[in-house]
Image 1 (cartoon, protein in one colour):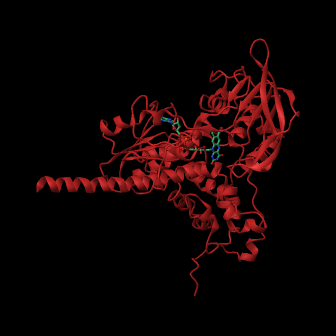
Image 2 (cartoon, rainbow, N blue to C red; image 1 turned 30 degrees about the horizontal axis):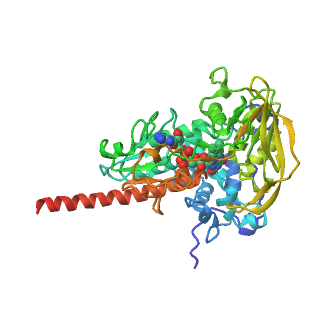
Length: 492
Ligand SMILES: Cc1cc2nc3c(=O)[nH]c(=O)nc-3n(C[C@H](O)[C@H](O)[C@H](O)COP(=O)(O)OP(=O)(O)OC[C@H]3O[C@@H](n4cnc5c(N)ncnc54)[C@H](O)[C@@H]3O)c2cc1C
């Protein structure tokens, strides 16, 4: 007798491990480098089946353990093998409200795929591509395995921000029967998913679709509401009847290098550059007339080594840059960007200059950027992040022509809500303090995602959103208990 569930995989394990990993079809590098259409084209059904056949169905699947929201990858793969794609999509949605998004942007090499035993000797199963396949199939065929919501509780929860943390929290809270109202400062919903990550990695239609699914399930969305300015958290709770609030405002305040010349025309924060390109659709000029200091026929340098830097440099390339380069102060090994994005950038012709740091930006008499002076670095002792810190090599300065520079040196928390919410505890670095349950120092107020952890990943933000939903639900049940006690006291 064995506990092994019935499997839809007809192959013995020794055959499965011989199967090569399926290569997802992509737009050719020389073509995609000139357009903003999606780079990865996704698995067609037969490739999804072939890739699913590689799974050896481990009794203790490391892929589930390594997924921050514990998607039941094994069950999903088995449903794909059964040809039940809608069932597979519903299975993913039990743990992950935004599968078409995470299937495109998750750093899988550090998460699910790092737990796949096939990766120890060869290549792991392409889990994200499979997740994307079922989510796309669900959307493209107009079907949706909507989870059933609990009866209405009459409780109202306000969610601040509409990034992945809020969207995941909204999905769970609406299913628990609560009223959910999302407030977003910008005119478009989705957080970094719409203003940061470019169309060629994550088409905006997909984000809109996922948001519409939540809307159909009853979540109310309100844009152009800057909480802390338009309305405060105290007003929401004491005047507008919200029983609890979840703050998920992200970490969107750009950091600069603080070197001379950063004020010159042509020097951008990556945040501003990407917002203009993505959210304001500058890449669709003249259809969208968003002002953007032109990249066309210019030398563009992007300073940084994360996903933001890759998105900025690949966008600059697509906007017609003569040269598009990454300048990073450590080596490629320490670069935090997803491996796939680095490969894609290289294939498209992005130049990588490692172990360099800008020391000043130089301009002409009109205040336009013309050159950047840099200094070469070597790696010293590890810093707080565990990565070896760069140390400048004396006398190694050099100057290169550069008419557009984009600084992608990280972000920090916008202080607006923290400064307008009395009693809300904040960390030394300005992020909101929250305990393990994501409760803040203020009763009924919870926080999660980048505003608590600092810049992280979509799936970690979603994990925080789900955890907060659970804690908020417990808190609201407690409020019911308190109401019953008050009623009893009144009767006695
Ligand atoms: C360019 C870029 C590329 C990235 N690429 C990847 C990737 O490939 N894979 C990955 O996993 N992660 C990636 N990340 C990181 C990931 O996007 C974030 O970790 C994630 O979006 C954080 O989610 P969040 O919900 O906490 O906040 P956000 O997505 O930042 O959303 C916060 C929302 O709150 C709104 N807001 C802020 N203040 C207020 C206010 N006072 N009132 C109302 N609304 C407010 C903001 O406008 C925003 O819409 C990337 C980040 C960037 C910037």
